[in-house]
Image (tube, rainbow, N blue to C red; front, side, top):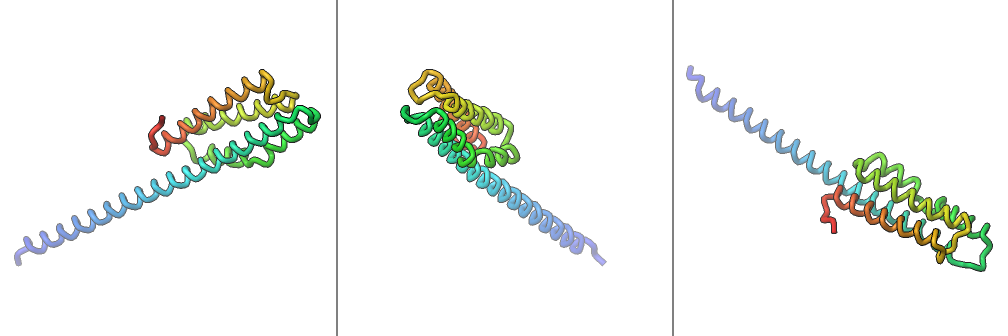
Length: 156
C-alpha cells in the first residue's frame, strides 16, 4: 500500500483547517477591537457632552450679578449633580488607556475648580473665574487630543 497519497491528503486537510482557524481567530479579534473602539468612541462622546452640559450650567450660574451668591453657589453645585460627568468619568477610568484617564481627571478637576470659584462668589467677569475658565479650556483640549489619539484619529 502506498502511503504517499494518504499522507499528502491528511497534511493538506490539516493545513486547510489550521489556516481556516487562524483566519477566523484574526477576524474575531479584529471585530472585537473594532467593537471596543466603537464603544470607547461612544463613551468619549457621551463624557464630552456631559462635561459641556456641566460647564454650560456653571457658566450660567456665574452670569447673573443680581442673583445672591448663595443662589449662584447652589446652581453651580447642581450643575455637577445633574451633568452626569461623575458617572461617565468612572467608566472612562475602567476602559480607557492611562493617557486618556489622566487627561480626563485633569479636565474634570479643572471644571470642578471653576465650579468652586462660582461657589465662592466669583462672577463670569472676575479674574479668578477667567483664570479657572482658561485652565479648563486648555485641559479640555488636551483631553480631546488624548481621546483622538486613542481612537487612532488625526490630532490637530
